[in-house]
Amino acid sequence: MGEQPADLRQLFRSAADHAAEYRATLAERPVRAGKSAAEVRADFQRPLAQTGRAADEVIEELVGLAEGGLVASAGPRYFGFVTGGALPAASAADMLAVGWDQNAVNSVMSPMTMAAEQAAGGWLKDLLGIPPAASVGFVTGAQAANTVGLAAARNHVLAKAGWDVETNGLNGAPRVRLLAGDERHATIDRSLRLLGLGSGSLELVRTKTNGVIDLADLRARLVDHEGPLIVCLQAGNVNTGASDALGEACDLIHEYGGWAHVDGAFGLWAAVSPDLRDQVAGLELADSWGCDGHKWLNVPYDSGFVFCAHPDPHAAALAYSASYLVTSGEREPGDYAMESSRRARGLAVWAGLQELGRDGVTEVVDRCCALARRFAEQLEKGGCEIGNEVVLNQVLVSFGSDEDTDRVIAAVQAGGVCWMGGTTWRGRRYMRISVSNHLTTEADVDLSTRAILAATRAS
Image 1 (cartoon, helix red, strand yellow):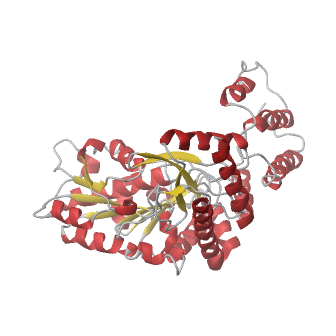
Image 2 (cartoon, one colour):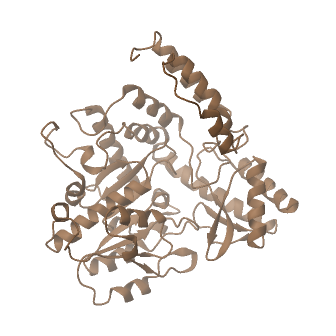
Image 3 (cartoon, rainbow, N blue to C red):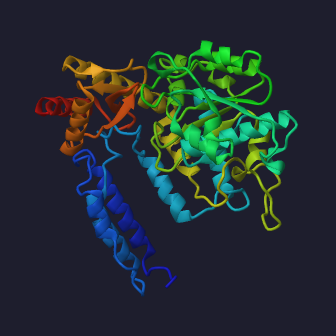
């Protein structure tokens, strides 16, 4: 084995045809998987054969086995987990990235990859209102973006205190004070664990209506503060979609010499819309930002971005050298991300942004938010309770008691017309609707609303 198939073009075309057929039928497919996880697992489980098989046979079997376990999460009626659906050009570019098989760590290994990511990174900063001089790392998603951003923060605040954390570690280091809102995303806690700062060291700041940070409580906690300080802010509350008052919070944090990190997995995209950007006003004042591409930008998994207003601590936290590692001598893509071996995920971002253009990105965000409001209006008219002020693309819906809400959620998921998950917010259970897909239309919302209201009557 290890030889090229006799007809590599036919193999790749066949795989592309299967993928295209799946994508072309998304609107007609039940959104749920056709089999349970246990059934799909049983289909895949078998001893590994002693001898290999032809590549085309392997792919055909994979397609057959996968069918029952595919969830139409790329389709227009999947409203769980703030999940977008990959754009055609972005998907095709990702296929090329796999086919070209470039290592995106530096310009020596792939000049083309570096150039595409630098171009796409510049476009992203321009769209989101992030300072042009900020560094950009192409990472796997919001978890990696938050981890890298907070690694840069740790480097910076400890260096200001005279401590080289990259060389000396955290044993004996000055204490870093860490604050975040009590409705932060769980990836913040995991990042702190991974960085050795510890989730238990996090001081939780009160949040107000719709889950935004209480600036008065933040100020009260910082009175008389001295020493290393990192504060995590949020653009896009995971339940309500609301964003912290970023500009005012950043000014306050900087008043005490701290680093402001913004977890903007999906909410940062509000900046592209003239009608919505007030929600993230002042975001440019932060020190680092995390954002997802596989949510609202609708590029394939896995894709995320970390931006840092201070490129030197960003690179100092992540870059490394080795005698065998040949580089250009300048900052490289691998200096701003954690992986040394990664595919050229920036190509899909470059292609997706080209396909949409500036107006297209704005239109996707504005339309998704309008469709979220349409969900809320129709469900409220149908007798459901809307639990949040719908300011972006998130809608919380209660159908009475927690038990009633869970029953409706289960019934909707089983029905297959659409898929929404559940959440607990401020002690109550809600259906959580996230509208993030560029394919979703008013007709999809109307069909989904009818399915939800039918489930409420049936339960």
